[in-house]
Length: 470
Image (cartoon, rainbow, N blue to C red; front, side, top):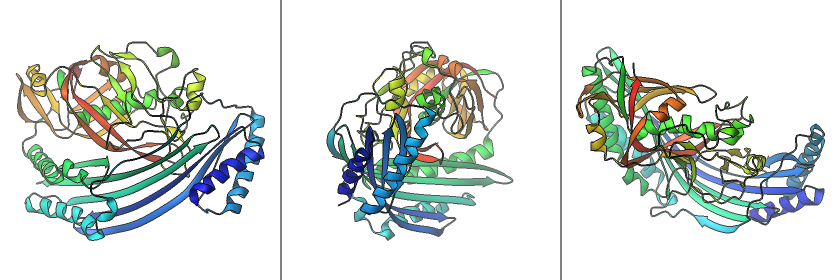
């Protein structure tokens, strides 16, 4: 029935005179839980369903969304959208779409332990068990914020060029925010886990061990952490720290809507320009990719929200800028085909250029060999804060768990080592990368209204040579 309404909406937009139309029917079935300092503060069970329609009239793009799935109401809103879009076409801000292949596909992410098969008590118990493990430590953790969400997302996308794509993807997301106190000093740690698939993902996260180790590391830093040497050092960053740097300074500035100014008043601009394709921005070992096709990744999809087939994109290859993230509009501007980077986080949001799984590709060194390369330096295992300017050029990363390295050996913890660097300097300082890789989940924000969307970032351990740390 609902798919028929999507077909009806598409046909009606074309009947009114639209040159192009597409409809995106989307259902979210989710469960959310929040435990704060041992108290269950939220248990939420929600189902949303709605229809988003884009249409082009006189080369002008219009968008409407509705959650009243009634034939007459859908037609009324499409008529209104058509009139407004036609009137807006007088501004002559035309849009062109790249010519991409049309697909008729159905796909889903399989669940070994289905989201629907666990009871409410079993889902809430995940957080309550974590709470118990934290309290067993006898370490002072006065702030314990634990949240968990599962979300089954079903989509049906169609367009007037013949695409018909159905997908079913289950998402799991766990977030925590912890405060550890020792005497009059404290440290905080927030982090997120996320996958697509069923509840079997929880075993892979190894939550109990990882969170307990983080709390112990924070207490160790509070007790024994020393000041950071304030001079140029070699720095090894874990995939978590590599990942946030890659996401912020290597993913966002390659979003073509930023490059062409579309996001200037919302999410910022980019120091990258169209003329920089083929220019060097990093050392030869730097290979930075965005790949939504990684199985069970948090940023997984096989077709984007414009019906374009997903693929791996090399944003930087051997240190050279090679490709931007595109939707069909920005791709047409550069006489290219879209590379499948357009997404929205629900039916009622506009489709924007988004990252998926953005990471640094592995290198030739083992993790141990990277440490052996460092005679005097720092290992930053996790971060506590970061910031970056609107151009994605100047940035700052502050370590949470970090250690001094002497002659390849970890000696003692350091308190909040801080890297301040610009993007070209960061990537040109990469001397070596590990063979080992890790991925970490995040909710990437962009747009107005803000759209948080699932992504992974991470990749290899990075060895940065001779950079300023304070």
